[in-house]
Length: 360
Length: 234
Image 1 (cartoon, rainbow over the protein chains, first blue to last red):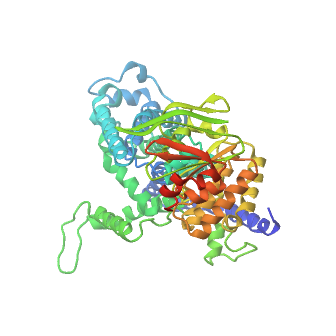
Image 2: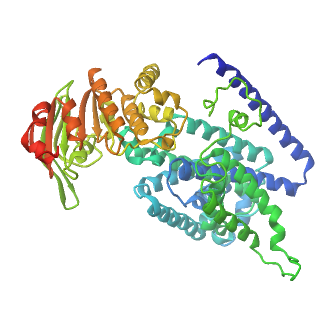
Image 3: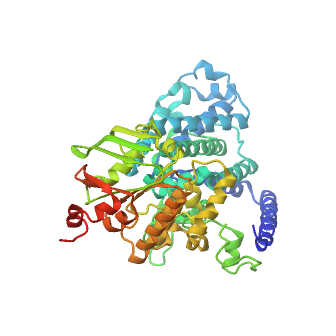
């Protein structure tokens, strides 16, 4: 490339390095400063980042409206939990019916359990994808929604494997700050690389125009299945992290409303923007805690309410409506964060960048 | 080199192509003209494997009906779809990269990118801009440029002049001549019969799923049947 681009490139690399070190430092400071409850919220932020990114891959980048995310999370959560529990914990949990013998003595460290959980969720995603991705639009949404409910019903009834509606309790608290954010950062880097690769371009072309994508020689169906499988894999990883974050799981946590929580984040952040999903995931998770007072008794001046559980969600529903009416592209649209973009809006000094050429 | 025999397509109960046959010789420009709904686009789409068809399509002597589209693209048969189907949310550069999706020779792809930019300097100026923000003519240029990125031996174009301003129509037909002069065989589907027949070596006239008649481009231009039906002359 020509010379003037060299400067901003190295400047951007330096800025990225500085930001990474600052971010890492911030994590240390947080860990040292905040009490365990606050830290739980920061961990949840990271898990929601992974969930939002994985849903955005399928809904935003590949343009497939899928509503099955809670199901893949559930598969990941249960797989990870069952593999990582000690045999003693399993005996203590399965009081109605003992666990099937071939699982009774399995006890894996967290990392392999988490990876197997992701792979298994990815496999289930692949199975569903091969069948359901022949459908389009609303039909795909209905099929995936139905699938996620099937998963929940199976979990509720497969007593000897999942302990049914009693759920699994006392899981080891493996999901530390480092695990959660380490996974979130790894997933972010992976997705950025994926989206910039020829696979990512193929995904986006399918979203933009399926027929033209096919005419370019892209294996449209295969690419859809691939995107769906990766998305399910990541949802499974997030599910595993969530299980060992909450330390208690039961099938009721994975009702389809869980999918809508993630969809809310994706839509608010921008369908088709990695930056948007990350920012929105953190913002929404923090607001859920900050706005907790809305659920308690409120003094409105002219009346005092007794505490309405769920009032927080009304706020998010209203926000979603406002976004859909006034800013359909969400916070970021399909744009991404870049140092050059910051320079363009005047937050960083411009250096050597030619106007109109520095988008990535 | 591309030889189509008895190609037929059904859309539900509609017999869209009733066994058409045509030949596209290497290095030439062949045009397929006809009214709306005559089956011109269907012909191109079935050659590319985008539509299920019966009959036979031989490409360099090999049967390609039923072969996956990506294999056909890899073998050098490329379609510029109707209605300028560029990828609106992707940049010019990304659109062009997708044109070269089936190729793996990176250096060759970059050389071809420069060749496309030489052909369409406007695209180079806006290489980081999203294709959806372009005018119709610019999108058509991008669609053609994208198809050239796959280094086709045969370029099939579906109504490239549709809905374009007259200035762009002239430009597109100039470009078609240039592409052909560079050694690419062109199969052109057009409603603009006059412009198409002027550039074509051979023309086929389609009517309701059949080939009504064919002839040399210049001959068809003065053919009474063509003049009455498609050139609006009496």
